[in-house]
Amino acid sequence: MANNKSALKRIRQNDKRRLHNKYYAKMTRNAIKKLRNETDKEEAANRLSGVISMIDKLAKKNVIHKNKASNLKSKLTLKVNNL
Image (cartoon, rainbow, N blue to C red; front, side, top):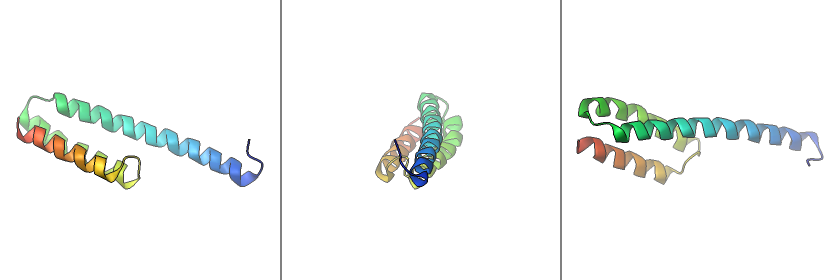
């Protein structure tokens, strides 16, 4: 266990950030799944911009790697364009 106040605070901050990151990462994964299951091109195109925005926010905060974000955006865009 931590021996000083700063280490205890760091543990609290890490727990809070981990829960925050987990929540938004899961929310983004669910949005990606909904987009992949979409069959209507117009609806998928409308949803795509929101999902890309969510992916960019996760990459900006280092929740996911920037290359993973780029790959996800590329694949989702291809999927929507091929509908």
